[in-house]
Length: 511
Image (cartoon, rainbow, N blue to C red; front, side, top):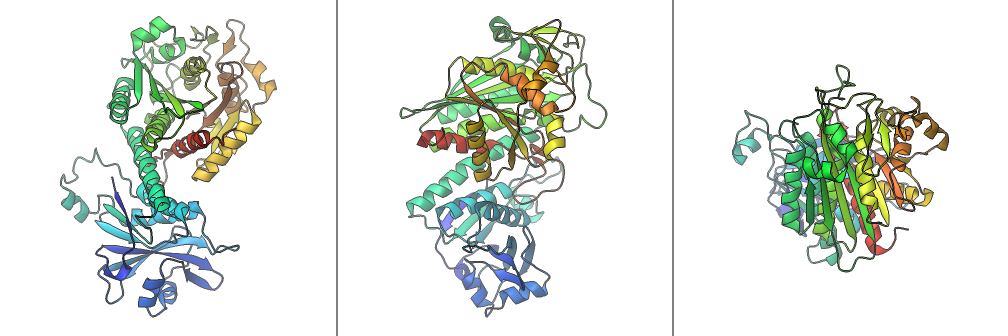
């Protein structure tokens, strides 16, 4: 993991591989952003002009490298675009700072140390730059067989992530600055751990292996953990989880992570879909849709990371995380279309499509989570392709049984830099899931499929419990090129939203 330090040292005297400065897009060309005054002075106040000559405009995410001025110990200056100059008070938003820091960190892979002189107007800015840089520096090369094993060789070949980020202008003795930096480290490290899990191939991350990772982290951070294996699931009547995992040699698991605080006044439950590989089962996915299905456990990865991050931050809230883990495979023992499963809640479900499996494992976990009567339940899942059609591949949908809570979740996501959008749960779509054989079918009308899935899950939430559903199918796995602080592959989306919800609950500001 990339190290983070706070420093008040002068940019010219700091030993580093590069100095990162911010540049904004002005009406008449690039404008050097606050924080880089000393660097600009060393260029005789002509840094903006030099950058413009090199083709820089200050556009968001644009990276321009140039030799450092005379007298600097760092050999390189890296100018990163922040986007348009702010029209109101001249202050850049947290997400603009995160993305710029992330783009710079990605551009400096293979470097040992970089000093960031981006605008740090307050502690919130310190946290944003730190978070963006740490997330942008992420890489996943565990399975690169030809990659050199020693760090020095990796750095020479540009394969190692940026080793150290120094935030210039951030004061280590300032409590607010230090707290913001510490939060950024905890959240970024756990979010990057979620990315690792999402990127891990399914032959190494089956339900049992995922549960083992959760057990190890729980032990390290004082979190109580309970793992139900296939025998315990059968004894407990978890027909949904067992039904989805029935076709695989890798048996399913239900993991409970319990973080408690002696000062907690609220209890949240987070439920994550953890399909470690989704072939579609008997309703096999068509060619071209299987290659990235290792990411179908992104919801469980997000829940796991959020609970551990909350524990590391010592938040004054009780959180129970539920990881519903199974592998969905076709075989002679697999659940068939037309089968009826008796769920943990006692309801029966007619399975019309075995590729609508996520809602089945979540249904069992939601019913179980409801027994504790938490103040709110939030489930996270790569649930439907329909949500990707509706919102694209960078925005997740939010459904809820309470409009006020849905708005609170949306605000938490936006504050965290995770694009999201509130979606309805139209009651007329429920009729499409009526079954002549069982209490409910796992499929309904074709149109509005993401909303139908939300309505199905709602059936398994305990009466009177506030609940929200995050369908992260779009942004969970980035198949395109990296951007900002978002890498190619697993993104760890929803982790920061869940952590923010936990912070709001701890402070009494969540409903």
